[in-house]
Length: 99
Image 1 (cartoon, rainbow, N blue to C red):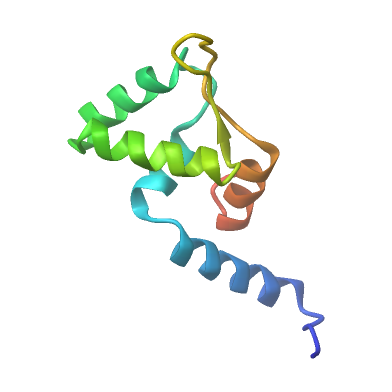
Image 2 (tube, helix red, strand yellow):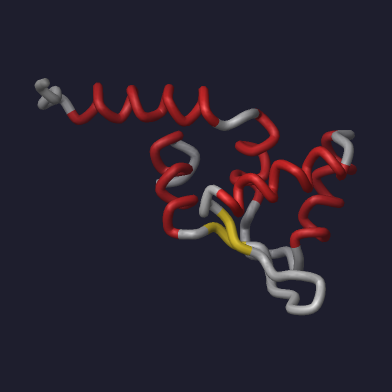
């Protein structure tokens, strides 16, 4: 098995893979995390208002992203701001969302 020596081709392969594996709501959540929201609920309520997507749908997708290790946030009894993990930042970089 040979791996291509063309980094741009490899990046394109990973980009297609991530876009196929993550749904649009998950990419929306990842792209929207900017450190300005005090909690996951604050972020998701804003996204729900702006996109008219049900908050329950967004919460389910945020939970999946947390299980995948792409985002982190606190719990009801231990609140903390929602943030991208190192892996979440890497995924966004591969998707071409951040530099």
